[in-house]
Length: 215
Image (cartoon, rainbow, N blue to C red; front, side, top):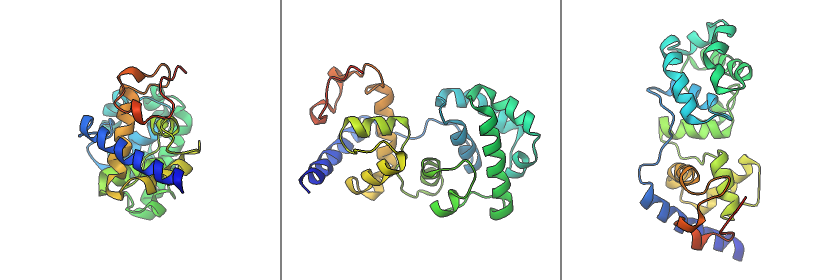
């Protein structure tokens, strides 16, 4: 119980500090409608958002609806997303996802987690990101940065993204779940790097149980 209380107090202070330096934190993926965000998020798996943003303008210009993706020749879709890596699997996921959207949801993005995760290629991370951005539904988005910082800041003992999500949920007020996720991402990109994090200039250094990482 003591550890949980300590984690919650530190998590709240972490959120307070990160809110000050990243007040406008949001996804770095470029999109103009819910479907575009969903497709971009699928493409972002094991790929930098910057690279995804280089690919999506042409992709979104070519395919505008879920049916467009569902009916696209798979080899053409693969060719357009090749720079994002794992393009064959991603093309299958995108096409399978959009076929399910057309068949079960009239081509629209579902409004619940339960429905979102029925889409091929969509897990809780993608669902939380899209639901938060599109419908304002709070959710903790556990990407590689959130996973890393949750461990370094001792907010979770788990490595599995879904377990980390559920560990973080009771530590942060529900209305802060989405922005807190984006703030951790920003901090991971700007300061708490995977290798040689900039601990000496980290605003969270005194709250980190393991400062001065050198991994």
